Image 1 (spheres, rainbow, N blue to C red):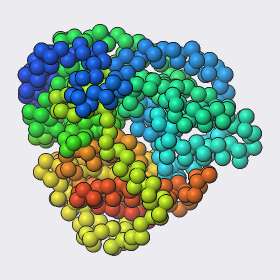
Image 2 (cartoon, rainbow, N blue to C red):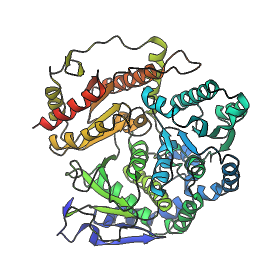
Image 3 (tube, helix red, strand yellow):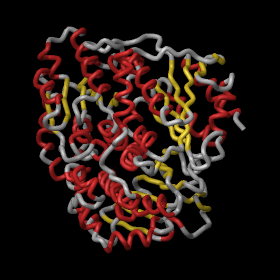
Image 4 (spheres, one colour):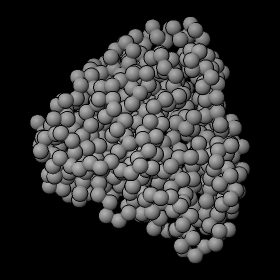
Length: 551
């Protein structure tokens, strides 16, 4: 970031259309040349027309079936009458729960939080968090099961658990089916399951990948059922689309060029995503999975780092592009703290979704990757499946320090282990904190991000709740630049929960997912510190205290 007294950055120019503005992007070194090349090649218009050749011959076959996001808002309008009718029929079910992972849950969470509608998002395998959801207003619960493939293990486990809970409450199968809404792609196994359950079925746009699916059924169904006027989001995206085919006054092009040029020309291959406090909540988490999973492959990529405020540790650095994002901030306004980001993106939520999707596709072209595949995502899933079949690894801690077990050949105290990990971050690297915990009860664990960033001489530090990050930054960890260091935190399960119809529990599944991901990272020779909390509350307090003590 630059000092607010510098008249560069945000004050260098604004590119706006349909209520959304991108400020400061033109100041990124190399952006003008990269943009000129894209314009000369006709890329803005070709992308708006869904040309699948823009990322080279190797990506063309994938792009042909993944560019529906450009105008999916048009097809999504066909859902609106069905959603209105469904909401009326299910008006007595006032507690909407969404079971989904990655793009199937992050966009709805942003929509519901930003527009002030209650939505419980279940994107975990933590037994305590799942049990709490099952015990919350079950009789009034409408559970939306969202999975593009229809085979997502977490979501299938949630479906089984809710079915059993309704059955145990005394409902018959017909009554149980009424409590379920299934969202999936045409032809997925969940189509058949929905019929067998007697559940409502809504099909998503098959030409849109999960992380680009905010304005498809995956983003719209749960939020409409929770009371959001989703037609407004579609209107906002539709108003923006004409600008995305233009060579100028094109916010998506400006943002995409800034992201790509910063990584390619200026060594800024990390982007700090900063909520500017102007009314859009959680957009950074959604943009994180979009950027990380789309660009982190073939040893390259753009690492998104969601930070708490403009002056938060890890929001600056020679290899970090800082971007503020939000709703109503006027162009050119400095978002607090006397610190000015490199760029700012402001505007209505529907247009934000389309702008970031377009920008990600543009950035992918500039850095030379296919922004629509995810070649490394299945690795940790395959490891998890193998562990569930063969059993959890027989490993014991090297030492126990207070409420925390330390695994591996590392220091004998938590403070020393954290210090060694932080001091070992590559000069061009980052630290990822991966917490397989309850993101509500154990929420204080997220405070580690800022503390470790401060201790790590402002190196970028990300924080992700497991297993949800496996559906977003997990791709970047394996496919992106191999410069990451990793802190994995697991916790004791005092009361496990069975997955009905499966030979494992939620606790076993959670442990297998953590072990599978550890293996994937360790196989790459990357530093992985595994800490296990034998008392969650005490262990988190001890971790925070140790992180504060780091010098």
